[in-house]
Image (cartoon, rainbow, N blue to C red; front, side, top):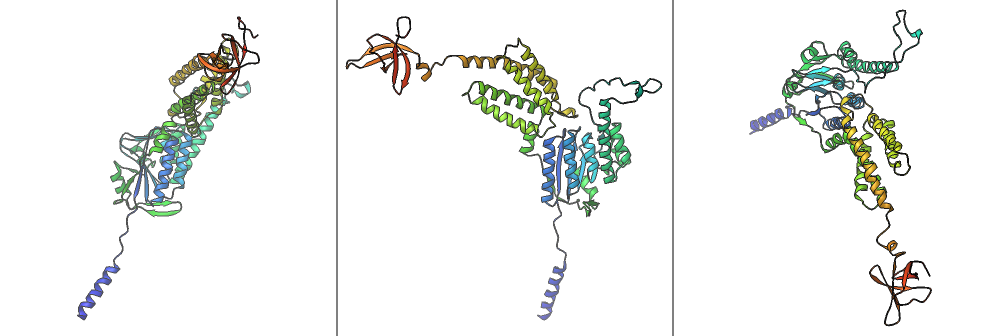
Length: 453
């Protein structure tokens, strides 16, 4: 028995000496598809916060984007640089791209990965609209051959934007130890690379066909995150796929410049119609909700307040056309101001975030029709005489009725009312209502021609 007890104690000590198996931290997968905007920046920020709360060992951003807003891109990069969880940006699936803003995000990430048949680059800032013609410089700014050496103001602004973008991406390349020279060329010369070329030039770290292959290649890789060294164990890690929720989808809809523009117009015209025709309720409710949604969307977008002011001025001039005889000049000026403000409203270089010209033309025609036709009917309706209620009774005429008990009433607008007057009234006499006191009308006698007697 002693021997058996000793064997049991020895066996239990061996079991206690075995290392405790701990759960492998998960890998969080986020997706970025389409032009990068405020909704996507908000989704990625909240995804990174959730990954930190889950104590994930890695966040993978699967990306396919043609570019996007500069403000949104810089917001995403700030969140990546401050994240306690390492970030791997994965350009996938096959055929995807990380152009413009996507190239900056790829450079900012701890790990840059591309799938076969993908590309990145073309990170030059895009100018919004045609550049103005360069003014002719004075002779002092030209060389002996007569060539102008001094750049125009438009070219100087373009150079400033390009230099700023080049310095930004060079800083990211130096931080992550990637190819600085090519990053500079991607901005200044808008060059692009395939996945194989990017790996060869040290622009990216890996090529992977899909997520399982990516996690297999990253297993055991060492990273430095916020000054601390990490070792990934991704081979058997659980993948937590965080898809865009209702908030992201709603933001993506209302922050579309075309949708925000339409909401703004609905807000203006709904409140305006309610103001000129009070009591309809529906235009005011719809207009108020639309205007609040538009203002929320516009404060997330790069808005030109000059453009917004021109739109408001255009609406004001179109309304003023009804009150001031301007022979159409106020209406014409309102349309011009409205169109110019619509073009200038979204102040960005990203083509995906410009308001389309057909939409501007359609909204302008609809606005002119609404303000010059529908609003005109509303104003005319306000000027019509009241045909019901207390105001209808005042001034109405009727015929005196003498009741069997000797009291006096009057038939007015098809109804019999008790009446009182300052002078005696006779049967059949015509009277006019001059006041109302509860259910008793104050009347005065009128002559055959409707004149007071």
